[in-house]
Length: 353
Image (tube, rainbow, N blue to C red):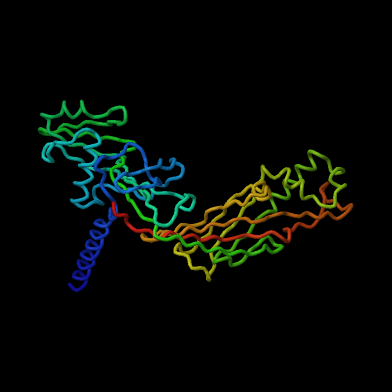
């Protein structure tokens, strides 16, 4: 009996925690009085005016969450239903006559906040809720009116089911944004740490990360192609083959292995990722940045990314020494090669509209 009591208590606690989670899912969101038919995520927001710039293109957004009716409380479901029906031209019907069941609600969020030209005190659309798939249940006596009003050019109606005096249709929609999270950028804090490369193409514990630039494959294949194209005799006239590596590097990326160290203070837990980077990007004079992690804790979002300040591979030949018809030499990084870890934190709060 004791075991059963503990078991039921566990269910009760889990359900209580689950219901609390569901209630907070749309915390901070504003239900649109007039839902938009295009994404405004990333747009600047001005009180009483709304979005004053265009939203970001789709490749700069992420779908950070996918919800359905089970993830919404009654209040949220009712508000979202009213917004969606209004955008479809179906406002004015009572909930007894027309009901919405959300099958798929997608949360679109800014992918790379650090790329936007934001300033402290500014308001922006941080995320939006898209009604991607839903069912409409309505009384049979208003069926003709409902079907006539639906904008079929933007909706895909997959099926229609009759039961009793009601009809149920399944609808797939695109760009039906029914709620938005408007935030104020309260503060932006940036930390930058820089270290020089070791000769082994490694940087240890740079703000909690280890970097290994695996360049062996790049160097080997670039030299093979240089010998094949220009001949071993031509290459033998040079003491350094650095420029040949640059010339033939575009087809062979550098694989950058990134891990977090025990000294790191990352909210993502154990981290291990390999990024492929073209060597041609690293020696053209520009400072390119590459994202690593994003930690979102609600009222602050932190982006970690690395910037290659300078990176140059040196290949010093041994005069007259070859192996398998290939020049032999020493490969290392230039002494000025260095890397920066930039951590940018945005402190955000719900904007008062």
